[in-house]
Amino acid sequence: MIRGGDIVKGTCLLQKGQPFLVIEREFHNPGKGTAIARIKMKSIKDGSVLTLTIPTQQEVEDATVDIQSCQYQYADTEFYHFMDNETYEQYEIPIAEMADKKFYLQENEVYELAIWEGSVIDVRIPYKMVFTVAESEHYIRGDTVSGATKPIVTETGLTVRVPLFIKQGEKILVNTETNEYVERVN
Image (cartoon, rainbow, N blue to C red; front, side, top):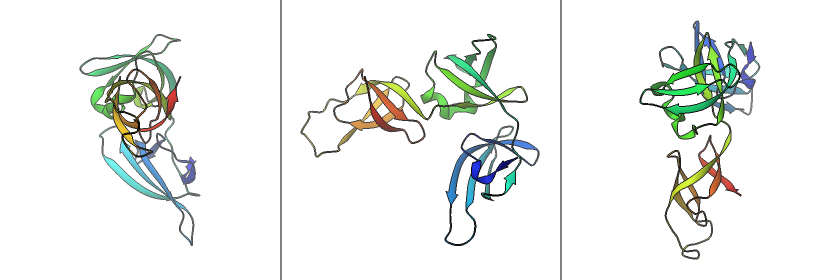
């Protein structure tokens, strides 16, 4: 059992006998009464979406999920391929089920896989990741007002708005929840 206030994005809950993965959560604290968590969940089995409003002190049933650290190998036309570096066990995850993760998967990086009843239900993306700038337009400093940004494309295809001084080939730190530039990495 897990309290409504402890639920985070990526938590797996049991609802109607099915596992649901939390894809969005928002806390609301009204002036009177108890705080609530608004949770949007996606069914792991059929992809249906369920929205719940749970008081933060109320307990709900969570699914027992195993977390396995695995190295991302590559993607082909149908699957993402991961390997457990300790047991050398291979995991194939259909691209269609994890299409929203494609811009964050970098070859040879280690990710946590959430496994429920023998099948992978989620790839946990770190909160912040380093990317290399693959495409960037050239701007001359002083052309615009302070705080100006430009769009760049990373080596994985992710588009991020960055300050004008960022050049092609540089490494940047990106917040993966908001896709916002954090800082330049040396």
